Length: 258
Image 1 (tube, rainbow, N blue to C red):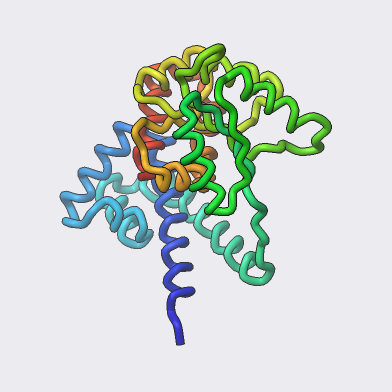
Image 2: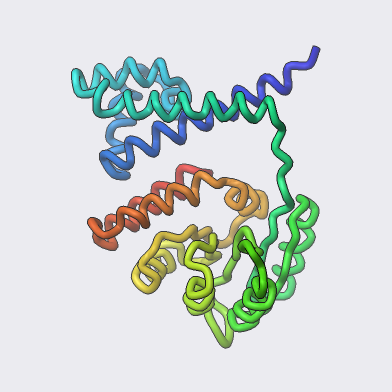
């Protein structure tokens, strides 16, 4: 009897646990605090960060050693609550399989060869892809495809930052006027500079992927809804934070996914 299905479910469950633990610690202590806590726990038990955050029992034991009496009420109780929720979700999914729709992607890049690579690769993964060669055409296509739609047409918009006529950032401004909740990914050779420009100009956290990158990495990011949920958390709480703090939190979210 094959065990591949069981192994896949276990891997998914461990990934969900790690996302919950990471998210809770980053919310409480920020990106630097999270790194400091992990360093301490690794020294105590001699295990890797991944081994710690994918094993709740081990993490709980280490948390009690690091935080003492505060661990249960401040850290472990919220994490246990979230873990119990994913257990219920997994049961529901087993009872009623979810049919995933093809993701629709709008991509803007001024290099035809790169656009063709996007198209060949992403369509081979079952995506529906609309290509545009600059920011202005991207905005026009976004308006055209969303016209008369009862729900958002594109699951994600992928924007090269440096383009003629209208940059990726300028295109994002126009698209967010139409749909403030649109998921976006910026592609840029200057990760930190672009991220700072996005946070300053748009006043919101958006995913940025640094060039050059493999298309597998891009596909992983497109599929990783947890990344977008964490970025949205940063947006919800942004009033209390300055740009540098938000930038650190976004960098931590993005770096932890690859």
